Amino acid sequence: MTLSVALGPDTQEGTRTGTVESTDSLTAPDIPWNLVIWNDPVNLMSYVSYVFQSYFGYSESKANKLMMEVHKKGRSIVASGSKEQVERHAVAMHGFGLWATVEKASGGPGGNSGKSGGSGQGKGKRG
Image (tube, rainbow, N blue to C red):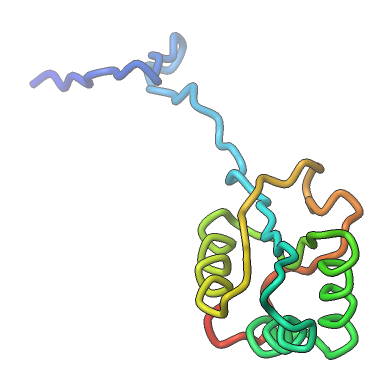
């Protein structure tokens, strides 16, 4: 009995051993992504700080620092992570009434490009 193997576009037959080798290389997941919170004319600064503390589990000082960055600079990167994780955070922020967007981090691995923020893996209920 002869066994045959169908080769797909991502494989090639090895010449010496007769084995099939994949030519695909494993790539790292497409991370990190940033959660950006934008300044708005609606929410009180104390409320924004409260949201950062209650959702992400940030300390009061870290939450206040990020809130002041939102207030003074118009935006702040408050969390980074996988695209799916950051999108979940953005939906949660919308639920709190904050203006949030997701953007691909411009820096290399580690991602924040020197900006403030965190891993987004705090003690929050939803994260």
